[in-house]
Length: 263
Ligand SMILES: Nc1ncnc2c1ncn2[C@@H]1O[C@H](COP(=O)(O)OP(=O)(O)OP(=O)(O)O)[C@@H](O)[C@H]1O
Ligand SMILES: [Mg+2]
Image (cartoon, rainbow, N blue to C red):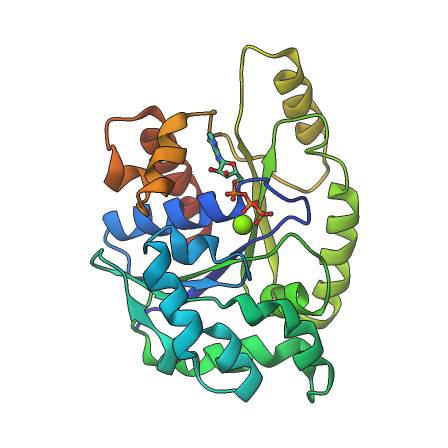
């Protein structure tokens, strides 16, 4: 039985491509024959909406079949897994109530490890090769839970003037997490929404290459409207338009992530 690897996608900068990267890497891993569980850790439901239309996503909120209930009641995530339309990709949907998750965690014993404990029974089944977790654009007790439950962190960074702002803060935060969860590795930074025509893009790449001990992943994702159309249709871009540039770029990025995570 192979060991389930857990990868989270986090960056406190909003709109840096976390949900887009998590959903597309998840789908592509399944296309490569891996069995994948996605966990939507954000109240914006963007990961859930990447696979389901709004009415179905809101149905998960209303029914209570979502991550918020699992964490609040400290239940196994196994009970909250739903199949997506794609073979090999399942998801634990999110809830708008995740807005008060910090409050729920506050009174709990060993509150940094609640998600890790809820995930443990799922890992024990050995059904999934990969668990991918999407994070909200914050740093706090909940994101700490996400990181403490993970083996690897991928940091999507938007190649824009403000894309790098706050990154040092985040790596400080990761340093704190590693004091209580030393298994967490920074797998790398993934550049998203790149526009090679702009000088700023090249400046961002140079700045990111300059980080010591943090790998900049070679494959980056350029700006592409196919991503938005795919999301509008609740599909990963590889399923929506396989011939698109971003479908290929996300495929290559997934292969690169797999190289490091599959060791
Ligand atoms: N390569 C791309 N080309 C064009 N648009 C993109 C690309 N990647 C992401 N986007 C768009 O940018 C926006 C932000 O992306 P996304 O939601 O993945 O970021 P996020 O980091 O998850 O945001 P948040 O911090 O709010 O959770 C979305 O509207 C998405 O459609
Ligand atoms: Mg998001």
